[in-house]
Image 1: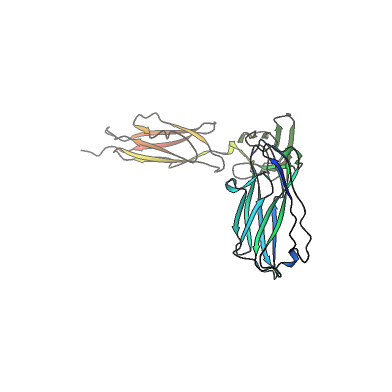
Image 2: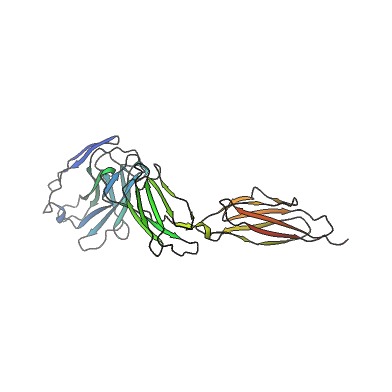
Length: 348
């Protein structure tokens, strides 16, 4: 069997990558892949990686499928995968991995290029997938392979816009139309301004790696959160459609129970505190003017959903006594009052 000519040139360093090259394999023929009873085919998703040197690592899922020329999957066979240069790695910082094909004749591995990689120019690297084949028509000892190209580019060459989107709504889910959403670039100061649709939805495109803040406004309303921030630690490098703003004027504290009938003897009681809109937590502070009601374990301060734990001391008076617990949202808004009525001691 005429050998395949494969030249792999690795001129890549993580600190500065200049290129990863290989020569083309022979075309299919009597001595090429057409002479095999197994075909190996690999793909990379995505097949183009944009490397931001100061951003999180980027990943590609490598899928390799082995099939017989009958179309049936090749099951339970080991596939050996390696990369043709020093750029990136497989899981656990490995330069090569071996996986066994599943019931579909497939193996999947993750290929990563770590944060801190400096890439001065675009390169094309390859993941080589090989499988030992003992079913070649004219030679029982051979290997079948496929080369999976991955194009790696500096992030500044990525012209694909990043989509940011979400909703501006009232707490009951009703959309607020014509709310103004502003995306302000923290580097240039330039704003992107859009308005919400009748459903309250909005969207806008920013450049890869965008840094800035997103705010929403509408006359007569205040919103939570006040803004979303994309900073150096979390730049816009992938689309996000969870940037929702909820009218805080429609959100209130809900307590259960809203009144406590306490026994004359000392006892512990709990008050569950939630938000009327589960998607918007509310920080709160609980107070009381009764010295016979005490809060346990700092539970007088919290955030929904939370629990206020109290102890009501024994009633040593001769009659029942009333009390109150006041729970106030830290950001302002209506307070909630839990009434307490402790029974009188039993007559001697």
